[in-house]
Image (cartoon, rainbow, N blue to C red):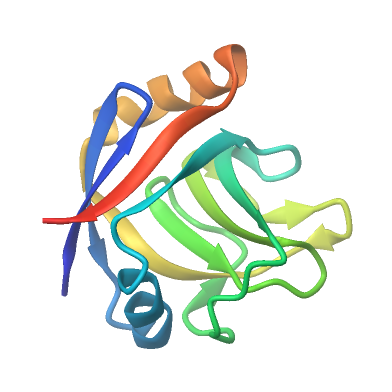
Length: 136
């Protein structure tokens, strides 16, 4: 298990990799430090996402779900919709304009839950925020 620091807007979170998604975790860890923009989800409920377009991480489905819990970070490898990372901060059902999706649950927030709703509200009302992932 690897621990990561996630900084999104003014908030910091600690996440751990998920043993049930070894290929996704290994491929993502090679990208660290990873910086992007996070925006509010359109169809997935209380969630933010990182749109990645045609980016390919080189992984298939593993440990995938459509119903992540708050703090269960998903990587969607593409297919019906563009590649993305989903960051649920509340009640979520992972979806796109094409319908319900399933993403690889590869990271779980273990510290900073108290800031998740505030991050969601910030992104919803103030727009895109910087986000970074770094190994601890």
